[in-house]
Image (cartoon, rainbow, N blue to C red):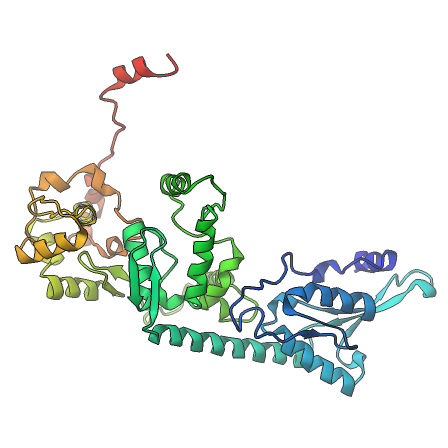
Length: 431
């Protein structure tokens, strides 16, 4: 506190360090109810000064310099205009000192150099209740908006990567990008303000900017190669510009999804002896091998593939006595063949994936697999889609646990390919 007193006492332009302004100005593109609800101006609590929401820092500096008032944790206030209007009214009814803590600067120096600053924060119960009410109202608005987007059938947009057209529900586009381009921004039901989110991503791509590392490239071809080779087909989780598009960020006052998650982890660590009998598995949202259908449990996805497409993975596993890693290779093999518009049963190629799937169904090739040597290969250890949750539903053969010690022996170690080492040495730039 002495450091704070000295800073304020020595310079009129100093700001209290623990209560610093946000590093970045408010985002003017925020959807309604997120950072700048509506277009209400931000008003001074003591005079007629007012500024538009994007100039929030100007008003905070005005409050500090002209009225010696500091508002704690402004960035955590859900609706700043309403917050300011509330306290403007309250300050007209009662003295400032009834609500604010008083900070005396340069308290050990001469009296004429001492100044009183006022701190308004959620230590005051009334302030805490106000912040919580604003947070709750914002959450309700966000959930209402999300429900509108779920029910909206007028959605129309082109894929950012292949320009395929999608109409109806937004989930069809998001599932397409995850399946066909290995680009996932999360499950559709976890996202709000979806159109604004996609606009933001499209603007970055149009500016030739990588969505993950955010570097800018000279042309689209270079950008595409970079994102593919570096596996940058995802967004940067550290970019808080995206926080407003995920519902979980609105769930608790002043906490992001990462903070809520870390808090949950600590609670689990502290309560290891608790009864976990009511524990439920986290939804896997696995995607069908033959269509865009998603299911949240392995029973549902297996039942769907069997009933809708006649594909029985359990039966194949039993008949072929497939070990865990053989199941992995089989799923990755089928995924890759269908992605390449090829029938995995007869290896016939088609112009598009839809034609291949129609052929597989019409010719009864759904359960027709090639010789095991065609798919039981090391290359199919690697997933066709890096976020393929279906792989997480696979299990080893249903034998007893007594075979655990032998299972490790069945996992092969893949050596590097050195079959043409002599040619490599002769052509090497190091020669």
